[in-house]
Length: 390
Image 1 (cartoon, one colour):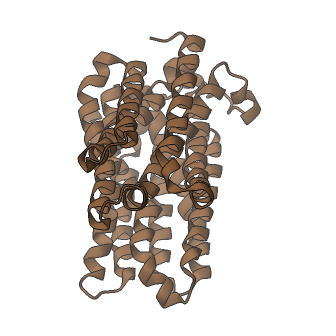
Image 2 (cartoon, rainbow, N blue to C red):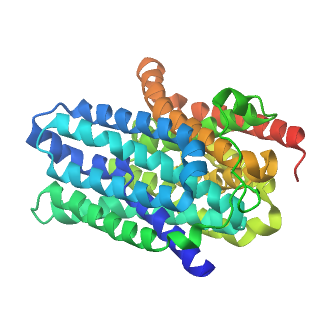
């Protein structure tokens, strides 16, 4: 039954990636905004609404999981996601998208924090890496489903409706599997009352938490900024053709997904901190290749893939190390705040770089990323000295 449960969690992460708002809405928005008569920039409003609700639900995840359990939170979140996606498919005006963005965001934050902590508590680090690899598979599949309908002359509504049906199917499986999730999750004895949920000030007072939150913010800032601006940098600064630039920008995400599958085979042996250091080293090597003032385009292009490979183990390893670093009884609360920090970095830093690039130039792109990878390195090293976990 444990094998069925981990397979179900893998499916949940594929589904989580499949419903990821950025690639799904991004691929459909050019058509949606024309039909709704909305400005192109209004997609940012929908993203901010979803991100804001995701951050709030991540912060509430500790209270929700301790009251209702991971299984029920995951199942209910899948239902909310399905309803929100179906609501998107039925929307004919921009205000309707804004309305459905609220349950969309609340469901994403809760399920993400709950599942990440559950796997960190009960499964080996290889599963955490593979889970996030499957998330990448889902995130790549969502735009493909949308493009399948658009390229055949069908409405974007069909894309959202199809993803909604997949989410509903998953929700049914999750409700059926609820008895499998009964294993105690926080180290307390069965029958005892679970420990009280921690407040944000209490979480921040735990030694080392501030280090990991800022490091997580920096990692997600680096990943999301790379994903959004790498193609523009390649075209505008390196003079690479737009089609080739777009191809290698997608290779960055393929590098992350492939790297997580590879990491799953070595993470148990090397340990979480070593995997993070290895990832940081690869990112620095990739950025060095991008920064080198040489005319050979292949070096810069492949440097972007190396950055993706370096990103691969960092997110899963930070999450998986949380129970060991801060205690099983605190892990759900801290994972929730880590998720909120991650979403904040991913939401705010790409627009910030856009402002910087507009003011000072796109050539600062690799230096902007280098700042965050160095910040992450020093904070992770400080965390290791603080918690003294190998």
